[in-house]
Image (cartoon, rainbow over all chains, first blue to last red; front, side, top):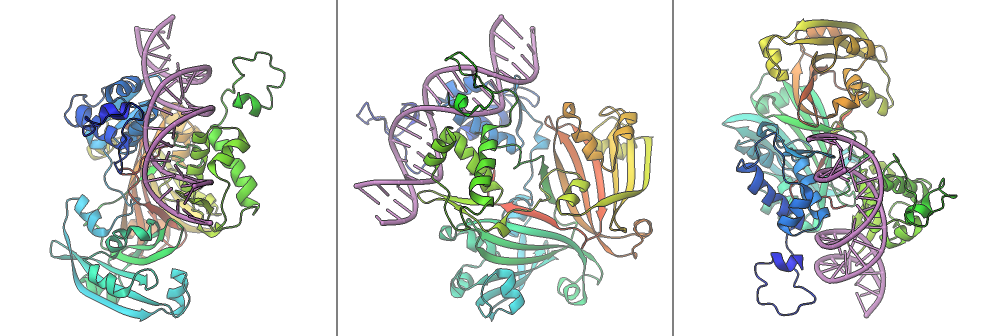
Length: 272
Length: 272
DNA sequence: AAGTGGTCTAGACCACCTG
DNA sequence: AGGTGGTCTAGACCACTTT
C-alpha cells in the first residue's frame, strides 16, 4: 500500500488488495537516496555539519520501511555524503570530502578520465586476431592455441600521449568481428555493454616501471621515465576470465585514487 | 526465541518472555557466515562449482531469519567464496579465486605484508616533534603553526630496503609522547588501536616515480629506479584528518592489488 | 509449474548518545 | 529519560531459472 501511495501512474487501478506494484523499476532505496540528496544535501537545505532527519522521519516522509531508508543512508555513507552515528543521527559531510571516482571501481579508462573532466582519444590503433601463446593462454586460463583478439593502442589526452594499452579477449568470450565492430576506444566498455557476459569485477595488480625503448618511442617520452603499470584480469560473476588488460600510464595526467576502508569484509557485514 | 534456541549459556534462564539475548557478541550474520564456511566450503563438503543449501534451508538449519542468512551470504560473496544468482542459488567458487588482501583495505604496511606471508622490520627510524610549515599544515587541514610528530623510517624485507615512509600526526590528534610510546613500526596501527579516534578510512593517491639522490641513498638503490608512491590522508568517520602518510615503495617485493568492482555505489545498494 | 534468490514491509529489542 | 541508530525476526510478493 505504501507502494500504491507512491505510484504516480496507478491512480485509476481498482483492486484494494493487492496493491499495484511496479515492474522493472530501480531499487526503491536508490530512488529514496536520490530524493534525499536532492531535497536535503545538494540544495543546501542541510548545511555540512547539519543533521538529516531521523530514520523514522524519513520513513514517514517517503512512506517506505525503515530498512529501505537505511539502505539509502548506507549508500549515501559509502558515497561520502554523510556520516552516521548511533544515538546521534546522520551528519552531512563537507562537499569537498565527497569521494572522487576511484581505481576500485571497474570502469574503462575513457569513463575514468571523463569522470575526472578529461577527454581522451585513441591513436596508433592495432587490432588483430592471434593464436595465443602458452604464456598468454595460461594468463587467460584458456587452452593453449585458443584464438583471441588483441587490441593495442595509445591513449592521448589533450594531444599528449599518456598511455599504452594492450587488451586480450578470447574468441570464445566474444566473436572477434563483434568486438571489432563495437570497439570505440575501450574494450571494457564493449564487454560491459553485453549483459549476458555478466562482467562483474577485475583483479588488478599495480606496479611502477621505467619506460623501455619500445614503450618510450610509442609514447614519445624519454627512456627511463616512470610509468604506472596496471595488469588486470576482468571476470564474470562466475569468476570466468573475459579480458586481460595491460596498461602503461604516464603519471601526472590523471589522479589514481583509492579510498581505503577499514575492514570492509571480515568484521562489518552490511546489514541494510 | 530463535536466539534462545541458539544460546549455549542461557539454558537455565527462566522467563518465557522475553528470551535472554546476548550482549556484545559478534554480529549474528558473521557467526552464520563463519559456520557456513566451516561446514560447507573449507572442508570440501560442497566442491567448487557445487551449490550451497538454499537460503530457506540455511534459515532452518541455523534458526535465523532470512535477512541474516542473506547478510552472511553477501559477506561470502564479497570475500570471493561464492557467486549468487537469482533462481539458481549460491555456487562455491574455486579456492584460487579467493580475494587476496587488497590496497582498498585500510591496514598498515606491516599488516599488509604479514597477510602476504612476509615479515618487515624498521630501520633508520627518526621521530621528531615539529612545527608544521604552511604547506604541511594545509595538507593536514590544521592551522599553520600547529605542532605535530613526524615519523620517518626505512622498511626492510628480508634484509632488503624496500620502502621509505614519512608520517605526520598533529598533536591535537594524539599526544606526541603517547604516539612515541606506542609506536612499534606503524603509525596507522597506533591510531587504529585508539577506538575513540574513530579512524575509518583513508584517501590514497598513487603515482609512479623514479628515485632522486636522497631517496636512492636511503634505500641503497640506484638513482632513477622506479618506485610506487602512495600519498595518503587518513580520516575519522567525521572526515577529520588524523594522519598524512607518504610512502615510496620499491616494486617486485610486494603485490599491490586492487579488486575493481562494477558500480559499487551508484546502482547496487546492498540490501542485506 | 515449481523453486530460487531479489526486494520490501512492519515490528521488536538493544546499545549508544544527548538532554 | 528519551531519542537515535544497530541488529534481528516473520512474512509477503516479485523476477528469474530450471523442470
